[in-house]
Length: 113
Image (cartoon, rainbow, N blue to C red):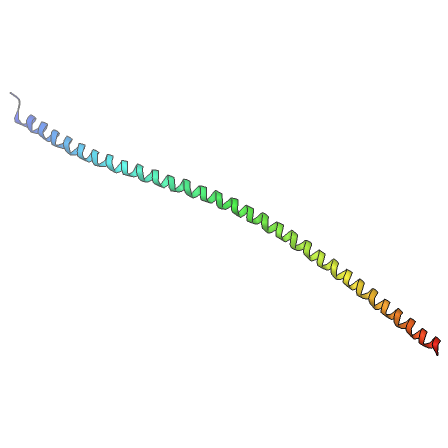
């Protein structure tokens, strides 16, 4: 005959095995939830990386536009300086012409007297 303690040991083993299986099932569910969470985080990271790439492209484009605007501003300043020089030259020529006209007018008045 089998001693009683063997049956008790078998019963204890079955109970422990049932508890272990329940624990393992719980751990398996938690691991599955963690996997789902990791997958969601990876999707967020992927989306974030795409947004960052798009933002970098836009920033590069903005920097290029700013450089172009600076070049145009510099060109506009150079054109303004050139226009000022032409205006000054024209003003000087006009003043010289006026002086010659005035001088000729005075000479004419003197000659008529």
